[in-house]
Image 1 (cartoon, protein in one colour):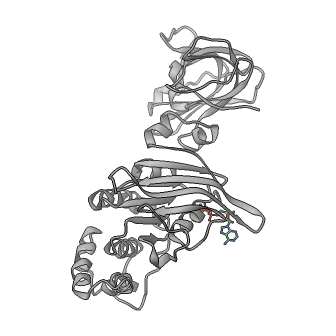
Image 2 (cartoon, rainbow, N blue to C red; image 1 turned 180 degrees about the vertical axis):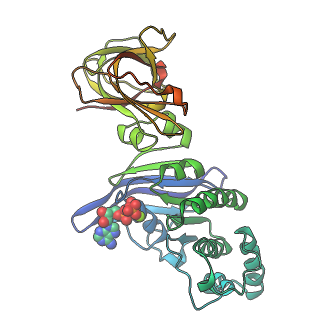
Image 3 (cartoon, helix red, strand yellow; image 1 turned 135 degrees about the horizontal axis):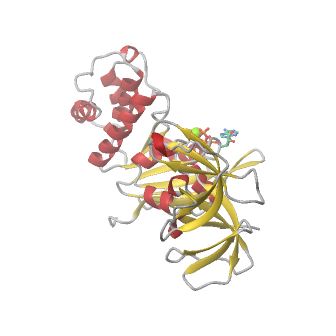
Length: 371
Ligand SMILES: Nc1ncnc2c1ncn2[C@@H]1O[C@H](COP(=O)(O)OP(=O)(O)OP(=O)(O)O)[C@@H](O)[C@H]1O
Ligand SMILES: [Mg+2]
């Protein structure tokens, strides 16, 4: 297999439980050695997709290909994948070594090879010397490491992980995120990793597939997803965004001339290849709070798009200051949020004063067309 050929190919997967469609055409490819994360809110179909890859669930339509071979009709144990679940699913009556050996014995790996792989896998998850410990004597983080050691010892082409750190406390989770990412790099093994935590996805992934209601809204590197969100769902789910309506006005090629909320006219550059609906149509636009700068009216921000706004509230949160703005007369309740750095002096005390909200032109993201 060529190195850039996909290791895993899915799609387009359809799946319903009873009458409710759960997957509505999910397609995805994962490359050799890639860390792919399935990210999305609860109930959007992440686990169902993972279970279809593992073979615990069959799709109503669509195929799963692994190493170029169609495995859709194969049983889980016939597939070159291994799954790590949120709850460790270890055997409490066996010691660590026998837990790790179990799957390899099922796969008929020779005993002397198993003996070699156990300490190897344990040292990779930083549990060297734990072979004879009883599982019941381990902490949560240690149990999850044993589950990982068991998974990597079998050397599958693809490791599937369903919120494997979800049961751990925040501090341990953060440590394990980095460890897991390093381990994945060292092994060169492809990971398909499920989480609903956007920060976790940003930290660990080579690429992220953002799920919403049984569909993938966007696939890209963390940078692409953050810097070039394609839909308001993605913009808001990853990092948060102020979302507005805008009408497309006639403009120059390569640029978008927009009237935001019937009030503010802006001219912003399009991304390469980005296509804008025809003049007269409406689109959603997004602006990230951390890109909105607030200026008093006697200051003149240079080279920025300026919006007249009213300062409504300002809250100091320690590491940042959150500023609420009213940017549009027509929607008096519409509060735009700006973030200022963690400087106590960024807090504005005089409220209800006119200000400028200012952004770089390329910080206005054009999202999906409106009906
Ligand atoms: N065996 C099943 N029978 C009926 N409905 C199911 C079954 N498995 C999943 N569903 C439903 O399918 C939808 C998607 O479930 P899935 O477990 O894939 O979501 P998820 O994205 O993993 O969510 P979470 O983040 O909460 O784990 C949910 O509405 C769920 O209730
Ligand atoms: Mg799930």
